[in-house]
Image (tube, rainbow, N blue to C red; front, side, top):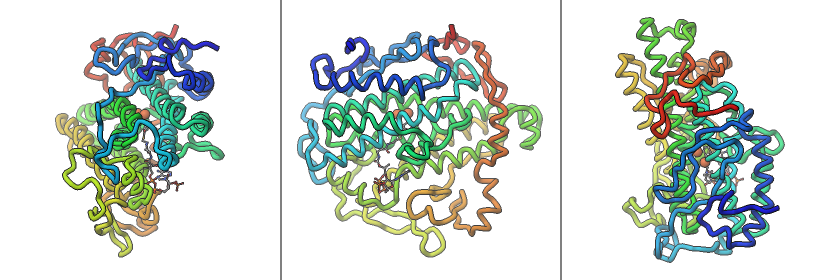
Length: 474
Ligand code: BYC
Ligand code: FE
Ligand code: FE
């Protein structure tokens, strides 16, 4: 089989001149395509979709818009340009030159980080694969496909690293990335949130708002890595992550705008009446928010983690915006506040900062989420609606870390089992909520038309009109 590399796989890693890498990818590419056919967006085969394809990392090349026939998207491999003489900025190797190859002693930890990152990408495509059947508009359908192909490209980014730098075990891991399945009882995806279902578009928008934001923070921490190829590839992935979060931020904003419009028109905040009008009441939106926020907060791992300490000290994974932090970047003596529950209530206590790095990244994430949710509240306020959406306390509904053993309200109060049972229907989506949201999910694909429960966006994609025919079904 012959692949025209620079044509089919746009890249800036000199693929054409690397025979070993070519052979590995030649084997992997057909497996990727058969995975995509089996687990990629359902019913998309043969559609012409108005997509952005990355063809280089410079300003002009990176955003090429045009119709692409699914699944002929050109998944490419891109590293941000190298910083000449880049130095390691944290940990025991601070000040030494960044690594262009993997040091033997860090090989297994680095591989594990890359595999964990890589595993989330196809997982999200699997989670979202049925959504095209119930899209609220052609515009949204196009955005879904854009997110899906880019998550596919993120998988390519990690597989490139595995193939190029990890030899035979790298190739085995790359194959295993196509073998696990989101939600599968026997061979699930690695991290919890990536085995949850994304059954409707409210879930999809919450997922891209919260869970793709975990992507932003984890990838940012990896852009600091001493392993330069990982730093450069994640830097480029972050540009795509921005669009995924945009889809979530605007998707939810459009839903609440529509709900607010109906609340004002009908002069009611009664969920039953609003549901009868075919829009999603704000308390239901808050419960979905609580769910997605809490499963995503778990993705940061345990509040105290010796893995995290090792990753940092050995230079594999830094902090969010490491270089802007004014400290010694070694953290041997430093402390960081974490939550303790041993006394029956949540109290802060200082822990060794090195072990608390997961918690620190989680706190950065939570602050960013709160700022994003505030923008939704501005939209509510502008329409004269008093209801405010809030990000739940980071200890709410935890499954990972010591907080998993305690029941905590969205406000951060420790509650009894009975207290939890009495309120959980106000805090997390009920079967009835999910059923109602599902009942709204019809397919709207006429250009310029939108489902009743969501407002049109204020602008189209890449300067195109909102009513552009973003997907041609043929
Ligand atoms: N679910 O010491 P701990 C994205 C495991 S999102 C299940 O605290 P550590 C994207 C953990 O693996 C970004 N298991 O863990 C978004 C460990 O297992 P082992 C994804 C969990 O290593 C949307 C054990 O518990 N990238 O890109 O400090 C769409 C002990 O825990 C979970 C990354 O995550 C969980 N939630 O931290 C598409 C970056 N949490 O080894 C894409 C790479 C922990 O004892 N990953 N465990 O069997 C990492 O840096 C780390 O693996 C983690 C965990 C931060 C995730
Ligand atoms: Fe991704
Ligand atoms: Fe993403």
